[in-house]
Image (cartoon, rainbow, N blue to C red):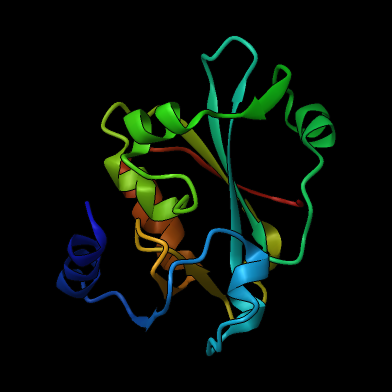
Length: 162
């Protein structure tokens, strides 16, 4: 799904969302220079894989947080982790570097990616801002709706302290 197909998907399912179109952003520092309606709900997304390239994970945290992959590995009982390549990102979720998003799961036809979402996104106002498979916009959703979308697609989701 591309950006416009994501918009149609959300509208067709009557899922509340707001869209903020903006210049392309590739990291949280660039996003901080853009006026967005819910900056506290910005998400940072890491696409990682284990050292055997068998298990892939999407880790979604509040934008201001840092993820220690060694600590994550210990807490979630995974093998050693590193960032997945651009080719792996493209082949598994049809996303370009800089556009990693939980909505990319809708392109995961083999349902190989396990998603971890920061528990803090469930705190009021229960919002999360993610790219619509393109880094020129942010879609604001209820966190519960995003979790439901991912689970309905068939990918496992774990709510975690990150």
